[in-house]
Image (cartoon, rainbow, N blue to C red):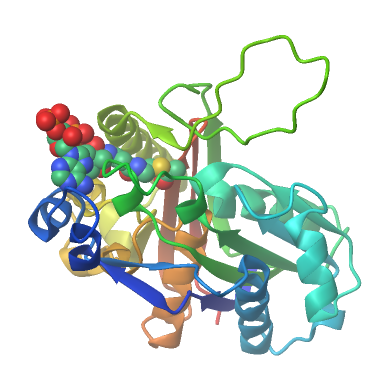
Length: 317
Ligand code: ACO
């Protein structure tokens, strides 16, 4: 598998820490020190599906392809306005593609899970060009009265087009059922027959535990991939890590012992945009001309579940 195009889209409403100070008992200093986040872009008048389509079309243009050239579409999404149809079906129609589509939910690790599925399809000869779209609106899962969670998230979309190639050097996925550290329950319609107690609540997160799992698991995954491929941390041009918290990113960088410039970040501008974080950051690097053919990249992400995904891929464009 190789990546031949990237795209991204963010909502226009940038919510700064100072804006949060207006209605939450918090400070810019606290948020900056604990998370590195200065602002996040949050959906207001936009629709998530339109942002997803914008990111998808940019990735297709970048790959010099049209929607008709795509023969499979994978959308990574945790929550959106529709339970059904799948967001991927909506995107397919709006961009004018005709291929089969599927949604996956591997939380913030969704981009790597989608890449793994795409790789299998390409290897099996079942598709030639696959469009991956990660579109997320975690701002709609949190209570905006809860300072412990709402300050962390933003919304956005990232996309990539992949095709057959030898550039994916190694990939690793893990799931461990740790459902109590991070979860969000959706309100369901009542029926005359429900007799169990139901207590739906906004996103619940045990922050310190998530922090520990994130660092431990990402370090483990990256080390396993380096060992598997015989590469050293210095052989990697960029570590494209999940953008949840600057302190998590710095802890992983310290473990690897690599220079700051090898671990790019944009969490300070966008907050945690779930599975869209990786492809959106990759798109930023791509469009800034920072990636050269042959550069080795590590992707690593973790999410609710607990899921993790990591891979080593050579840049092909
Ligand atoms: N402003 C001011 N004070 C706050 C805020 C806030 N926004 N949020 C929490 N606090 C307070 C708490 O109420 C607590 O006060 P108390 O001591 O009086 O009870 C105090 O700060 C310390 O709270 P902790 O939760 O212990 O703070 P911690 O240092 O652990 O930082 C944080 C919290 C930033 C959430 C951290 O645990 C973290 O980053 N965890 C990882 C979270 C993460 O990455 N989540 C996203 C992953 S999910 C995903 O990507 C799928």
